Length: 143
Image 1 (tube, helix red, strand yellow):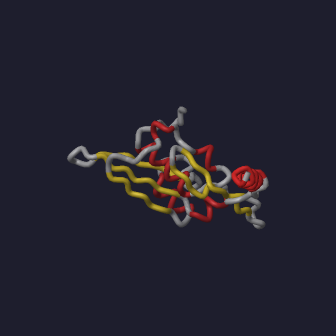
Image 2: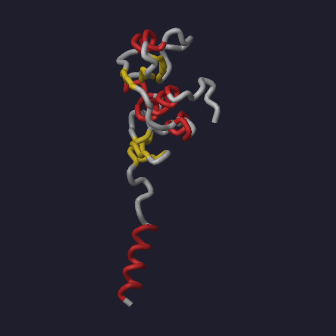
Image 3: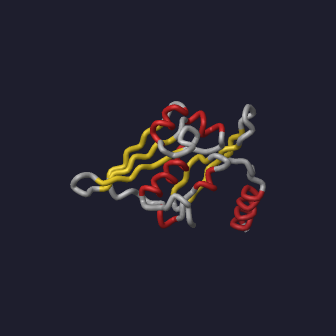
């Protein structure tokens, strides 16, 4: 009998739980951020993060040296991501190259946090997107 009450109580907690737990909405920009998981990793995600996630086969650690740089301005991104035609306003870019002894290296550049927040993206989603390019995900983003 006691077990039945415990089960009923637990079910009540699950059903009546706050549907917004783990979600934060901002009054100034109207965007809601919440805990999201993809391919075994969870992070505090922006509302538009999931559209930029790469296919699972490219979403893994990079085998070589990965160098990450965060921009502070559009001018930073313009210089980091040139010759991309929209280099100043992209959310990130990646440059894969090989050292003289044929070891892979990849530089990823991520837009300023204030800009990512403005467009509803997190640096984690952009990092994973750009790292996937380091792992040979083509620029035309096939799934």
